[in-house]
Length: 289
Ligand code: C2E
Ligand code: MG
Ligand code: MG
Ligand code: MG
Image 1 (cartoon, rainbow, N blue to C red):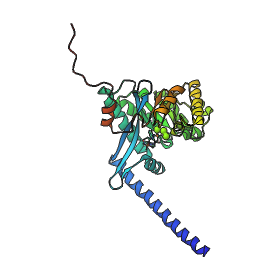
Image 2 (image 1 turned 90 degrees about the vertical axis):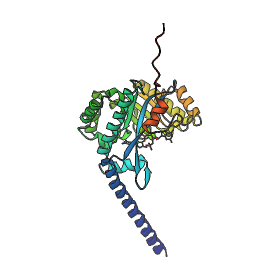
Image 3 (image 1 turned 120 degrees about the vertical axis):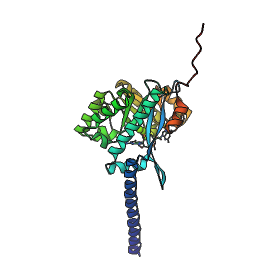
């Protein structure tokens, strides 16, 4: 009997494994087409200066509207793209598209000159020796100054990165692009990593922001990150701020910048401009005399 149920369990396991593999292959095939046919889109979420409430920048977050399955979130398809090498084409597209968007906003007076675009890059992209050179070309073509681009890398790049990825990071800094460590605190990097690698900022992971106002431990962690970042001259952004209580603790701890549903979710470019434009188009003022 035990043997029988064991076998049944194996059969079920086997079938679900097969389904999982099939689903992955299916997603990969569809994603390949989506990248080629530009069925992807980008949503933009404001990064806000908490003292003024003004947007200092935006994070570009990839979206995929699948013709049959509907909306698929990046947590699902980015991993597939990374495993199948689609990530370089997808990542290049996200960079170009978000920089073109920033160029349009700058030209239209929607954003200030120092407003930046934050773009996620996967470790695989940074393993491409031509990455920085190509990005430099994209910056020139779109007319966006390098300082207005922040690349968000994962802690794993610092922990597991090769000499090659290290060289790419150095080249990116030479271009003038800023580099921020995303989801900081979740990936086993230590203080020394931040000092050894050419990064310019950290984004405090949502999991630490979550408990602010209720968890003394999370507050101490954020306090430590702020102290360390200030010693190393790193910019700090808090991620996933959802409540005013969290915002107030962050301000008290000296975190200047944050991102989260408290200010707004990631939205399409028109909705972003409607909600966050700095300059409302005004009729020309009559000369005063
Ligand atoms: P991430 O870079 O850490 O981006 C922040 C994620 O937190 C986004 O999820 C955002 O929508 C979500 N978020 C923002 N504010 C809040 C909040 O107040 N509460 C909560 N609960 N969530 C909030 P999203 O858009 O689903 O993206 C998930 C992840 O997918 C990103 O995490 C990033 O790692 C990856 N990703 C997205 N777009 C790209 C891309 O173009 N390239 C690469 N390589 N990865 C991407
Ligand atoms: Mg990010
Ligand atoms: Mg993040
Ligand atoms: Mg995160």
